[in-house]
Length: 228
Image (cartoon, rainbow, N blue to C red; front, side, top):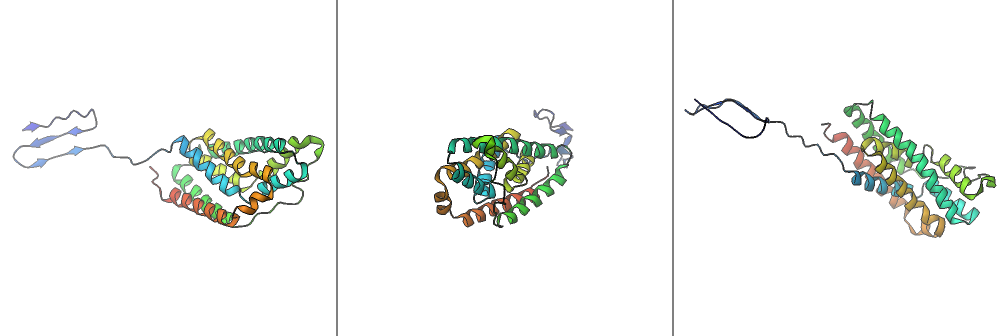
């Protein structure tokens, strides 16, 4: 009786091999895991694209348009939007990262899938600016008024909820928050300078349909992906 010897570290259990043709008794190989950990740059680019699309025609973009028309000072408004978004999405991303610490992968997979699909449906519902959201008191100045108005308008908004879900999906808090913030700026900064001209040139309905499809795909991928 001879023994087969393989130099593969400790990954193979070698059992006797009968030379008379009886065959291999047992040879166990470690399972192959197809899981793939998303890269931070993937989280960044997906977060940027999703929020930039979701923000088109959103009430916070309408708020940026109203503030620009009211104050006619683009730089303080843009800086106010940036600060408000960083704070708001920073908190939202923290919530998303925190959720992953006590939810198991199976439960999280179904919650994320259902949430992304619900977001796809939400994207098809036209948004509008609530009365009073753009009526910040000028005693705080243009910058302060923009920060307060934008932060409050973003609470419970599509892009804030999307940030929570993206931070839960990707284990890359800083990259997700950076991506969602960049997406907000890409959608809102041009509106501050160009006003209604840019909203009239962009097919908002088509953008919302594309966003809905992306959210739907993410939801299906979250549900049917391997739980590892």
